[in-house]
Image (cartoon, rainbow over all chains, first blue to last red):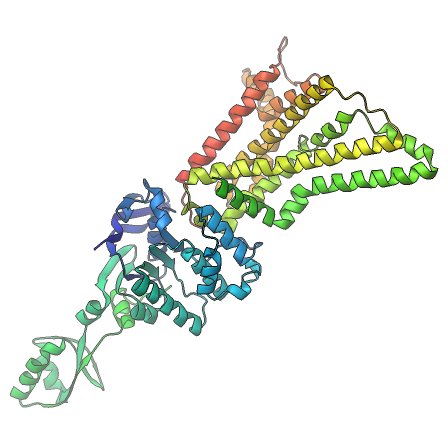
Length: 305
Length: 291
């Protein structure tokens, strides 16, 4: 499988002396072609810094970033295969949306004269394209930002908070569009988002960045299943607790039952242990942890973006 | 490269307020003044010969009109205007957060070089238009007031081409140096007001080298005079004065000092341009774009 982005031992330190800030600490990750990869982390975790280094906007203190096998610092041309939107859409406020895109197309050296109309159509901004960018709402600005990222039909999209400012319909449309770009057009998307449900619905793989380090990385399903639990309702509860805690980790005890760190494969063993001890079982239900609780667990509950 | 130039041009021309009040205002004013003067002269021809005579006093040779327009960009006020415009262009990229759109599409040195080149061409074209409007206006006015504008032959044309080329080259030099100052100032201040302020301070600070020289002489007994000879201000006025046939006043010059020739002054100015462009590119390549 082709590797789209590879970061190895990437470190970024801002400032000197007492003002020294370790924004990124030896991050290594690999994003393969044809997937949606999410970067998740609390405010100031280093997601945007990592994305900026992918795009050669800032220089790493140490480590390497390569895109399609080429080091972005020495093979700058590789970035022509990348579309990006970092920290919101940035355009000239005195130019119309269309002129801003024409300008980007010329900067890129695009010869396809329909490219601007095509992307305006994709992001549903055709009827507002001749208004000045400065008059756009946040949602319209985001759409134009995405249009700019798609303009040259890139293989890889690096998007920082792409749904920021969009209304629920817009978020859904964006989600479908990104999925379509990956599933039907073979694109790769690396994006960050503060909307956990969006990441859960959209991403194939994710990395959780916390205090400049990757604390969890991998396929979203297996990450959540790894942390899956069983909810057990049985009585008497004191005895249940005593028997099960000998073999499994008890995560929580509530009125709804006891939450055990275990998978569905463990259910027969649990049932046997309880029955053999003469206890009454009412329910054993697999309880899949949500991304939100998983995220809060691994980041110690710090605020999101 | 031509696509990149057109993109930069589109951006400059699209910033209507800045471009109208800092660049196009000069050719537009020249056009209005020329047309106005011609209209007044036409009315005066019908009934006010004194007015016609008065108007004729402002006219010189046919070359004079074309050349006089270049007084403005090559003056101190012209320099400041150019600095303000280039500051808006450079610092605007930081303020609007638009560098990231450009530098992910082209190498940084190409973008920086293109910006210098486009700005210089853009500003020079505006003043060429101004020169044309004033020159043609003067010739038409001279026909109406029956003013003799001198002979038009190979010799006068040759001298005119040399003179106007010098004026255009001076405007280009001013624009490149102003752009160099504003590019560097923009990299550190990252906002338009800060860039304008810093660039003007640098420009105004150039002649203050004289103060250093004076202090050096009186307090440390060392002669820092050669420093002043390396400033764009000195070399620029040296060339301008030589063109006008004046002698350049050099304060604090040691006795027996022989001023630089025009050729040396040109070389020093070109050196400044190369240095400022190279420094801007070097710093820009190393800069983290965080906006």
